[in-house]
Image (cartoon, rainbow, N blue to C red; front, top):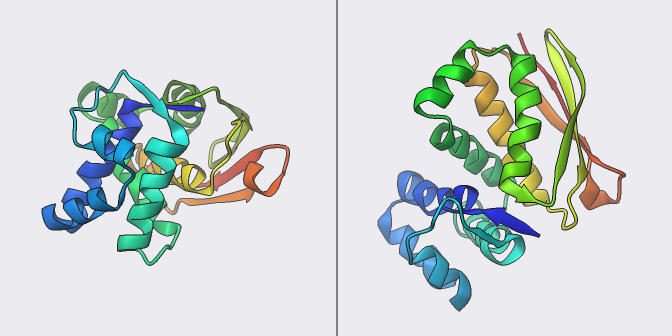
Amino acid sequence: MQVKGTAVCVLPKFIIEYFGKNELQEWLDSLTPVAQDVFNSHILASKWFSLNEILVEPTKKALDLFYNGDIKGALEIGRFSADYGLKGVYKAFVRIATPQALMTRSSHIMSSYYKPSTMEPVSMEKHGGVLHITEFPEPSKIVEYRILGWIERALEICGCKDIKLEITKSLVNQDPYTEFVGSWK
């Protein structure tokens, strides 16, 4: 499976922003030589990388170093990724979009970040919705939590309040899909 550079380049930016340059170097030193080469170079947003080697494992190293292995760190990285990716015209669109349109659009955005992958809106209502990831050949709890954080922050930018999002089923657990269930005001 592959991940787009857009999702990859966020990781070192997040570490610098939240932990500092010394911690970035500590994180870089913990990576495999291949991952070090990628993160020490200019990461093209349009380039595709190995999901496991360049996103999952480096994120796991960051979670181990800065979050005592807590998966909630991946959620924070996803939130940061939404702030990073939803700038300018995109942020303006998100601010005027309905939550339903945003959730539906999220399903299209995911396939532009991960390939092959499919996310489908299952139900969309005024104050809630359900999304399913039905195709993701290398399921990862880390990626699921990054996506969860991204959706949560995008809904906040959209103006939603009292957001409650959870993963109720997971491809990681051999469920037929990963299910994100959300409610908001």
